[in-house]
Length: 256
Ligand SMILES: C[S@@+](CC[C@H](N)C(=O)[O-])C[C@H]1O[C@@H](n2cnc3c(N)ncnc32)[C@H](O)[C@@H]1O
Image (cartoon, rainbow, N blue to C red):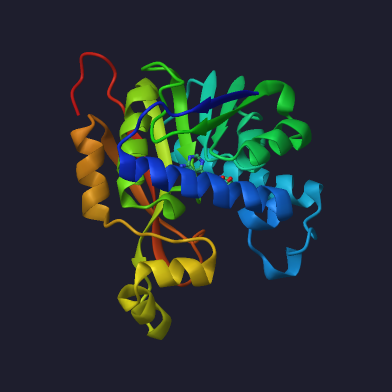
């Protein structure tokens, strides 16, 4: 388990990072598994750890099948799970990769991941209270993975983290992440689009943000990644249109 606080990010980023840390630490202390998978039947500590980690295994099994279909991720030494929470998906990735690093902004989530994840002997969990991933060198991971995290951080930090994903994935490696596009059509989507963000965030407790597909693609290409697939996604819930992006960092000597 390691811990790092950011040095001196831009001040807007710094206050957003601190806000996220404080909110997610609170979730970590009160009902961490429910905060990760917000099924109303499981609130109040009603997730059983076994079911919770099995849910993660099923999700990663689907991802690995998809990567196989796309002919990707044949090297399986190291993976990163960004926004790992209590290690639901970090743990599942360790069934496929020799070693998995899980990173989270909440020390409380990381503490519990390191205690509870069944595959914890093949995982290292890090607290990273920062708008970058400078705890990792360039070109390190075979897979950089992130699910149901960027939707909470906001567009500015999302851009910073995606740029970092591109930096730390190795040439030939894969970046895979989920991100909503926009609220789904319908009365609730209409309200989500028009209501002031600050008010919505207070009502929800967990803020949600979308970024258009075009912007995400442009960002990935600008960071030298090649977009291989943009798949529909349901993990943001029925009120959001969401996507899973899979991109590859070209091997040395090939350009995107
Ligand atoms: C909904 S949970 C998802 C956890 C995990 N990805 C999963 O699916 O099981 C969101 C997680 O993202 C973490 N998080 C939020 N903002 C973050 C940031 N800026 N950097 C790292 N982790 C962050 C939260 O602490 C929380 O554990």
